[in-house]
Image (cartoon, rainbow, N blue to C red; front, side, top):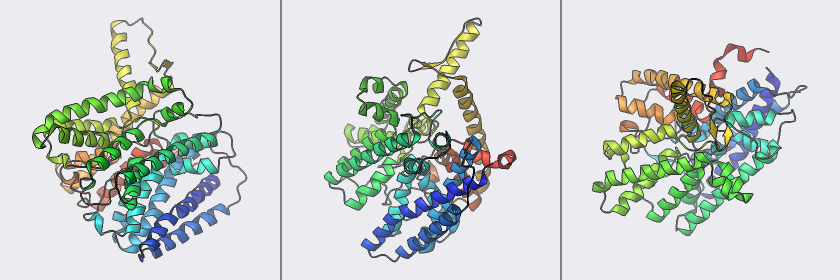
Length: 479
């Protein structure tokens, strides 16, 4: 284990976090809020930790898979701890576990909240709360790789694979630095485009920024207590489209930029993703028509909630906790499916679901024809045994974490639907669940123990499980 290199990378992460806090500090100055002191103090703490870490002399800069996983998991923990300090120091969230929960939920783009009155927060804290979504959406280490690539061969790719969502991650171009820059260029371009559209739709600048941060990172923190219910239909429709676009594999946008549209639209995962959205919207629209004055209203809110849930964003325009059981069941299923691999969305991922179903079909066919040789293919390419093995391991680990988390938080004596959807919402990085944690509720009623369990679920879900689990393996820490 290369401890010095791990500490060095954690120092870089803290320095970048200090840099990110310049924006909420500027917001506090613009709105003349005293919370600017909290950001100055936190920036100083981040900078001190970063500079001390960077002073360590490193002879061996090698990062193997083990180091890459540890760097990623510890980086996100460090981000959450330092990121929670402004909420705690300013007094907006005086209980530190709650401040940590809110920040971890932000960086992991979960959107689950312990706040009972969001609008009571200062503008700077509201901005930072939403901005953590944007930072966590693409991944802070991917951002660092775009500017400070690893000198050791393969190190950058190992970190990118550990932080990026999906069953497999590959470079768009030969150099990892260039790949990271392409990803962030696409991410930034889509972000700016949505901000412009919202401004043209009459949305205030502050609202446009925070709404875009939430939908770009598929996070879901809103700045109003009713989430997005108070915005116009046009503004809600822009967010609906944006959430769906950010839930698509970013490789598609790269292919479009390279003028390879036919190849982009042939991707099985994207076609299945869009088909699932279309079918879900149709079913829910028909199911909730009696609850709305017109077919358009039912379709509008159904489309918004389906886009919000399958992309694991978590915004809401209506209280789907009051919708019929069929609609609620569809939304819960979408929580587990999630968005595309290589997007900013969470969940199990559409590609994993496709490959699992293909694997089941293969086993059925081989049962009928034992001597036949069947290979799993996707988009014309044979899926390697390593990918299949990792998917099977992912599902097993996912189920174990889900069950253990559900058992622990059940100690709080909440009802089963609340507990089940709370774990589903955090492990899949959704945000709201049903009943007490529905779109009109929050997670404040859970004990500190349950909140730490749910925080672990958020981090594990965002980092695809393995980087967090490896921290608990004793052999990880051997030199």
